[in-house]
Picture 1 (cartoon, rainbow, N blue to C red):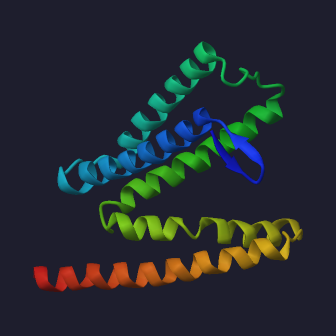
Picture 2 (tube, rainbow, N blue to C red):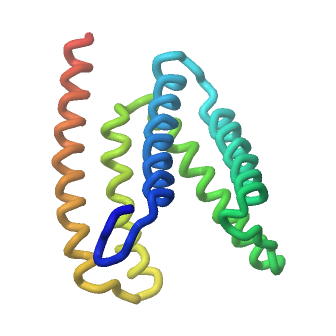
Picture 3 (cartoon, rainbow, N blue to C red):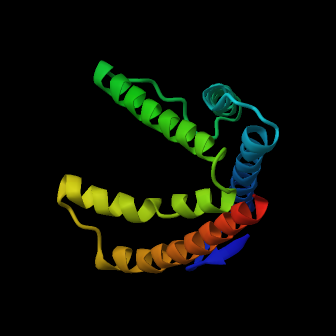
Length: 165
């Protein structure tokens, strides 16, 4: 077990986070390989397979391990909100997979790292409710790092293209 702010973090939690992190990297690199190097030309089909397997595994894990309770949809309104979220998420994954055909993984991930910043900005614009100032301050180094990493990644990518021709 690990201590953090006088709270004990169970090894199972650490294991799940490590498994999620490594599987995330594996999925990203496999998608890049299939779409760019292997010549697979069907990012929507790849996303469909991804979503179906995720749904199946999620259901099995929830029903077999009972790690979290199985929840029922309570209303038609809730159902349509879940569908809307699923469509937006699926569109996001399709766009990410398509982008892997054209840009390096590092640039894709650098752009993705800006998500918390833009989420905070759009949440404010939509709800007119601000987060604490510390949230915005902690996002500034992330955005600055992304700008630096994106610039370096983009320059190296463009340099490789120039030398390739």
